[in-house]
Length: 151
Image (tube, rainbow, N blue to C red):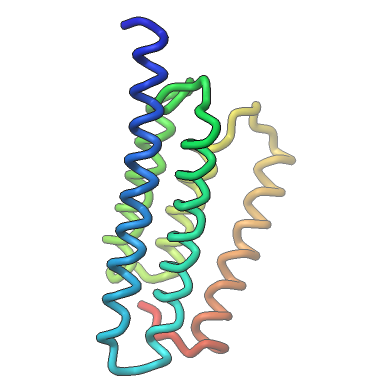
């Protein structure tokens, strides 16, 4: 496959995915209008609006100034698959093992997928302690401040 065909496929794919995310955000925004409790609308509406805005910006910038990179660009597939698998495992495991343990799975898997540098004990301790602090902060925020029922 020649380079220009690869670029055009990457261009089309990026525009298509951006428009799909705008569409998904609009569907989500519309769906929140059927929620009976106003408090339960806030978070999904906020996320949907952010999704629509960022996907629209992505669409516009890719449409106005096409990139030389086609599709996914360069990288390793196992990192992408690990990240997606970790998100699914976290979603399915959360009701069974709870918010904090599922969060640990998501954090560690995402960190492994994102870490391109060589691991050291210092790096592992810094990332581990910051991950624990972030997870405990989210748990505290959702459970005790926002009163979100967590598994």
